[in-house]
Amino acid sequence: MHLIDTHTHLYQPTFDGEREAAIERCIAADVKTLLLPNIDRASIERVHAMMDQWPDRCFGMMGLHPCQVKPQEWQAELDAIQGALFDSKRTYVAIGEIGFDLHWDKTTLDIQQQAFRQQVDWAKSLNLPIVIHVREAFDALFEALDALNDVRLTGVVHCFTGNLSQAERILDYGNFFLGIGGVATYKNGGLDKVLPHVPHDRIILETDSPYLAPVPHRGKRNESAYTHVVAQRVADLWEMPLENVADITTQNARTLFNLSPQ
Image (tube, rainbow, N blue to C red; front, side, top):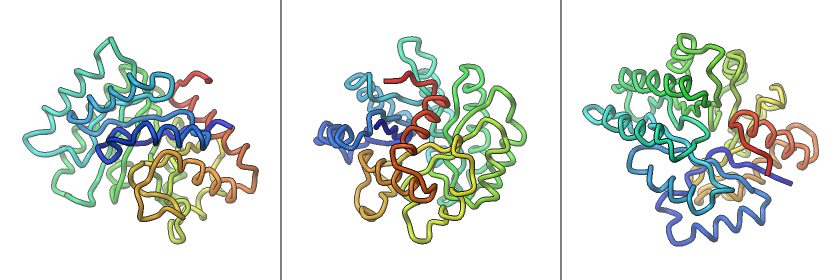
């Protein structure tokens, strides 16, 4: 069985000193491929270090997280990320993570919109998918995608926590997927009302580690090995064997991120 964690921050300092052990736990849990979303210029080298140490297992993205889109700083952040992204010495699998977050600061919506547009332009020019973070901001996301979506744009709304109507609207854009993580295991997460009703070929799995650990690890540090817990929850909701869910979601991830079979 081959599972792909399509969204993990395993490069973050919380794993310093035990990153190799975490990778070994992934292997033991059949999580054989890890996709690493960048969040700001400070994390670029950490993403690169994992790509270099595990080149057949860890694949990086480049993007500016919406919570890092701050007045007086965001354009310099984007410039640094753009420099890494267009460096011909490295290959990335996506632009991400990018998007909209109005949970912490609603005053930055305008610059979040500007940063999103710039990064979507990068994605189109490089023929890469976008990995979208959205928190309390679906209206802003839909406004942006209504304006920017075309046949060149593909991507995923990662850590999807919306309702069925929002899921269907995302999928109606044509080339988008839903990233499903630990929230699917939460009693009041709401995804039990969504996952049985969306096409299987539009779902990919993730952890968003070290955040949002699935039950029974909720409240503790999340890690990529727990992708199998998410996969089992999806299998339960889809009423199919775990191995089938692994096959389907792994193929979906390979399609979206242009990953070679391993």
